[in-house]
Length: 194
Image (cartoon, rainbow, N blue to C red; front, side):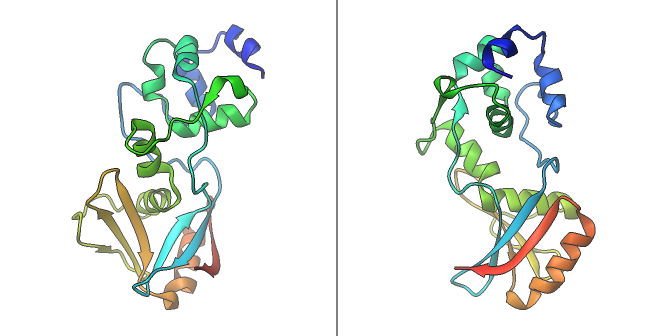
């Protein structure tokens, strides 16, 4: 759907978010990880001998739809509460063209902090796995061991940085079996990256 026909369609913000499987936002709420699309988990060596888990999300943020475009469609302030994955889904669906997009991700901006804290590969993997395993409360600087050689950690930083790591490569097979047995939307690439 092109932008001109999209603007003419009687679509509300709530209907649009439901169509993409995302919750409607009533004020600012931290985004919850959504198991709407399949994700591949990648494994990376770390200097301390552990294995960092990341999703197949892009390593750099993608363009967003300009605030004035979003606000003209759904009303003033809609840009501030529209989660970034919805921007990308609408762009990928062809609803908005290059003239409607911009790249606002300078370090220290709200958009950069939101992307880094929720949508970059390490944080997204942490959030998906924590949601899957029901892990929601632990100390910032003390890793939480949840079994399967898996530990979660919230690093004391701004923007938010959260990681999920395996204690070592010997846990990869057990981790893969556990994840793929619990979630049809997650799979594990067991080839280690540097």
